[in-house]
Length: 428
Image 1 (cartoon, rainbow, N blue to C red):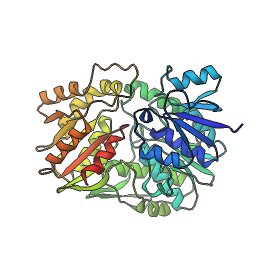
Image 2 (image 1 turned 60 degrees about the vertical axis):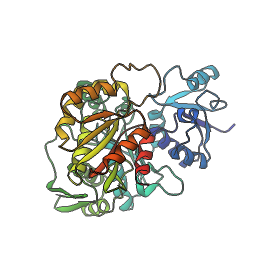
Image 3 (image 1 turned 120 degrees about the vertical axis):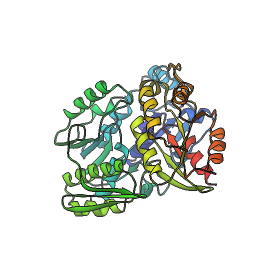
């Protein structure tokens, strides 16, 4: 019988990337997703199906004769897939453990941190590619230049000795990796409190067998930083770097990537040439066009630091800003609420508007006591022009109305596949 991997929640960013990596190894793959239960076959699910992945509703029927069930922390223990696998005696492994298994035999570069890791992973992989090292890359976001031939663009197949992987602190799974080279970009409260996050990164440090770039404790920074318009530049190791992406935070991301690449043997001059051609990352300050005269920009930002960086970067080029944000979970919103109530009044300027969608609800047993209305009430009390919009259609109408006066329409949030669709719809 053919060995088959069955991935629960295969449409998510991490699981779809793992599915593509398994396909690249010639493995048989099937999967389930709650979106299929709701009759929503996303573009990612379509691309997987077209590559031969059998897709099922998340009712346990897809486990069938699978040799292994792969799950993420988002899949709860009473999920029908887990029940079916347990009844059949099918081995169950975590997504990160499966990914670590795939990377064995390669020289591993791991990118960790609360913010910026998807962009740093993409930039590092791109530099190694342009340097001719043919890396394997598994990322948490799609790279524009790798979305060809119906592939999931968060994965580069690669036959070289190096593998670049984004590792995740949100479920503590980063500790299963033992990289030769690694970076911790930064640390802040997001999925956990700051103390717990710092302890988690301390545990990760101990697994690095070679060189660790520690963005938490270092005080160095690149020189001659300029971030203006929709681009930025800096100087490092006597070499000028030009990046076709805006924002000081992307300078920091590029600097991390350049250093990782040089540790893998790439000369700084080659790294500079690679970054100059970097095509960008899906849903990372991604420009889609215009609605009336307002630029439509989509970003995955979902915690206070990322939201502030996206807002301030866009506002420096297009003002005023009208934005919609969907919190990606009830637990994270509860933890981040004090920081969000401080951040939005700080970054918003006269004429800016904020629309909040309901929290993205993936089901389960989450405490729903703190929600978008809670945040909106707190922000309005601070004088922030904030409104809750009940649906994506209502968000579309609100942003289209705001486009008559705004310089930019900013779509923010993680997990919900409706957000990038909203961005595309606004420019139609």
